[in-house]
Length: 130
Image (cartoon, rainbow, N blue to C red; front, side):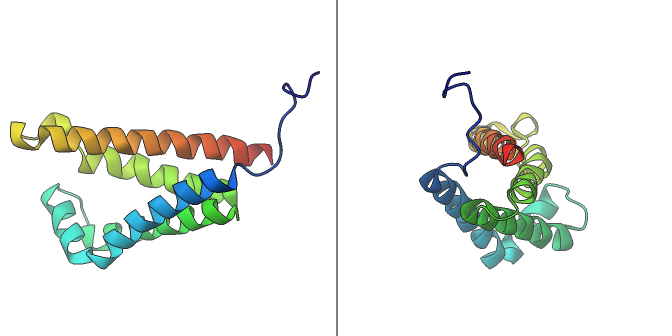
């Protein structure tokens, strides 16, 4: 087996973790500092118990992002991030169900979240190797 075939069991790139984690932490903090607006938007999208779910999901994202950045409890942290995106993305960015005026913005947000979910899954796979 060559060196390129062996599993690298070191943490993922510090720069990559910090960029991913800090970007997601900033999103979570924006949600938490504009909680009333985020709750109102979620209620408009038909989210039940939005007053409970919005802060809980934002906390899930914040905790996960800090865990990835610091590489602490990485499986739990990456699973938290993935759970956030799996739950939020199809409900809050339902581009297929909005009017033409909102379509582009919702599609862009949906695709951005899909990319971030993919990164979280990649980090989760790496965390399972450690």
